[in-house]
Length: 262
Image 1 (cartoon, helix red, strand yellow):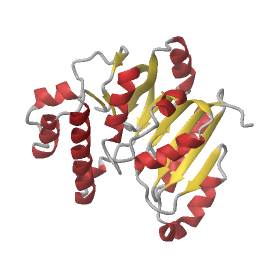
Image 2 (cartoon, helix red, strand yellow):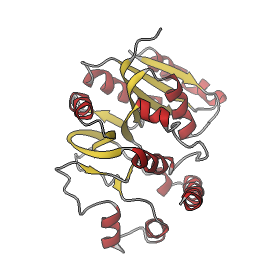
Image 3 (cartoon, helix red, strand yellow):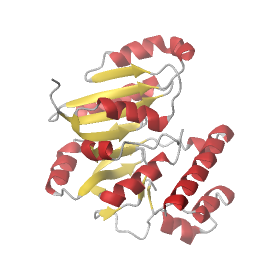
Image 4 (cartoon, helix red, strand yellow):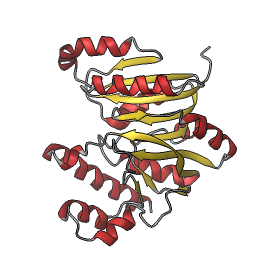
């Protein structure tokens, strides 16, 4: 019988093994007091993986790593659900490859969640490489906010943009977050399993908004200001037409789903 661990880190790989090696090294360095498993679910196509054999071998030998090769790209949500199915832990950490721990964050997060059972998930201060807090805390998605983001990508509608990314909040204090970007979310494993993880109808993008909405229906997703994690945010869909297409398709699925439910 597998002994329950404190933490399961779920990382989805797609060719970015060097980045993941850095993330895993930071996890192992800054979680000294907690038992953990780091499940890396690899969505890189089988033929392409041959070009990264050295990096894959290095990654697989790191402490606490369980590397699972899908051999095809199953999408972000489905890959995380594979990790969730295998998770034997109290807390499930959705962790992007571009995340770096810089302090013992979980010595603050876990006791806080244990003291506040009504909180089902935590998103800490996510900061960029210059230690500036990132705009990853949002109110619920609306068609209007999406149009502003893509049709008016610069400084127009600033008041509305600031409202959507919760700039009216005091970021020195905890607050409830309707939609926290899924780059780094700490969720009770029992809650993730209760919700059956991510909705796999989303291949990539918006699955985090959907998950946060479902978390907040039965629990609370809270911003946690007392520890910081670096997020090397690349904003891929803003640069790549194919990724932007996937993003828009996912948003259509999201709005259709929740309009039908509501």
